Image (cartoon, rainbow, N blue to C red; front, side, top):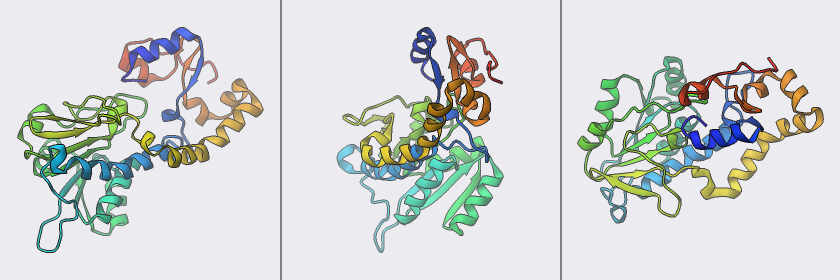
Length: 273
């Protein structure tokens, strides 16, 4: 809700009880209902990026894997969470040169172990982002701040100085995007060009593979749906702290701190706490 005030206001006005997929948690501090769509979007980001790099779309005309005797593409992934990890798996599988940038050193250690040196893991600083973005053929934005608007990590100035025909896939566009020049696009018209850089910024990327996405989301959601159905929302929220973390709006009041901060609403601590 954080990047969409109109939707949030409509939900406030409705008097509804709104539980957001993107803020329900689990015992590991993860976001189990967001994970399936993050997995799908992360894996799709590589095929979207490959598509955007084609000459017919305004791209440089680069094959991600290269061929014997020709250098593969440089892929930079901003964020090493579920989306970033899945994007990296696909990029490594495509034999691209892959860099992941993240601000959590423990996440970088885990990714380094997972990929056994096949991915270069870089700690996130402004200088590091600028250096690697400017060298990239494909940048994939995978940044997530739970419930809040995504920070703008790639500036207009960086876009202006990127290689002509390079491409960006901003998976974070559902949370406002992490690229300063990003705005939401559709599956029917997925790309646009700014300063000779192809932008792919489709909101709800998993909608393009709806069958896979539906099964994946239902698998994760069903236990929570059954709990709400069996116990009713009051008891379910009062007894399951992870479901309670998903409560964003309760009968006209904003009960998620990040949403309240982003949109300027008063924050009301949940009545079920």
